[in-house]
Image 1 (cartoon, rainbow, N blue to C red):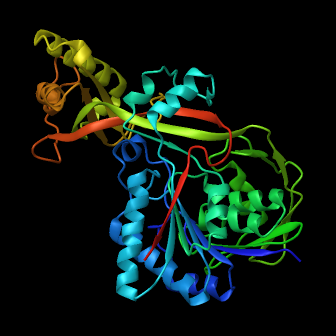
Image 2 (tube, one colour):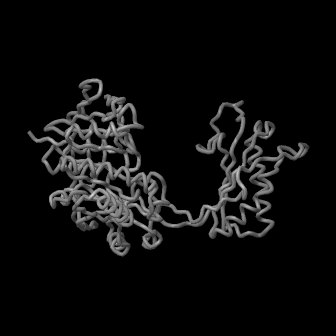
Image 3 (cartoon, rainbow, N blue to C red):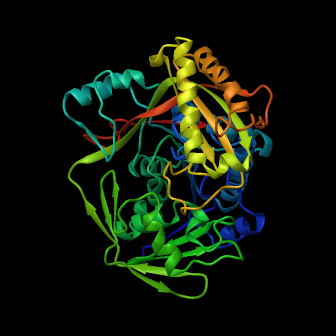
Length: 452
């Protein structure tokens, strides 16, 4: 009977897993170890700069655990979204880490590197020929948009992983990929049902996130002919019908449909069965193949520089009428900046009161709610770092002393840092959230092999 066993130790390499939970996964005799290594969840900076969000030391120790486990069992490894956002530099970083581990552990490995960073000239041609389409809430783009991005990646499907597995690669390091593709490759290669495979891969993409203890351990998925069985590897965790079925809503707007490069997963008629207190079995997931193969594009580019100032406020008179005080403060700051003739097109600023609506930016507290304290963050964005810091310094006196009313004594607030201005440097924003039509799954992808 066709079956495949996949061990997913982490939601992302660098997250950590207990030694016990990892060994439990190996004892179940997987056919492959697969893991994500990042995403664009953490914002445009990491894609824009091509740098990793995670500690290099943490990534290396997680990879050491994976490679030693895979060597012990004689099985391959698939890693996707290397270096957080999947740029070419992220793939090369992960290869370098693997080289160091091989030298330290005396391992010999064949590594496949799947590169998914994009040529801007090629994408311009795609755009001009009408083959790039916006996703929901995507910004409007122009021919010039591609050059404004410092890095652009396309999300690979399962096909490049499958090709590298056929070429007997021990470790496959991919740039940006759909999270599910990383896990789906081996069971698809072994002939498992695509609907079952893609749904199982979606469920397990973030490791223990689909369990009752998402902070420890990985998950183990057994793909059978017409179902998959998922279980945690940590002893203090369970997979439940609720935790497994709910993961279809993770980073997905539709609880029943998930789009992949070559089609859609339909779980509207899926059945979930609690086998025991730790394992869940899932049936009736369907995969609907599309005629047009598409790849998601993500692009990020610089948009200016930022300087921050943070001040702590506990004055009860100010906090009792915070909305009015913030409005008055903004007006005073705007007037002062205008007096100094700083060009308004060169900067913008925000006042973010943490402890009162900084996250939602909506006045949704009860009518008589008064915070005990707030952390007010001034966020200045400027065309240059000098302008951003100039504006922040101009605002400094009012952030230190600004009274609630004309007849009130002048209060003093607390800057937690000195100097009060914190220069963030260059900032980035997402400029592409689109899909591109391709003629085949390898059109925008390249694969290179290295023997270590």
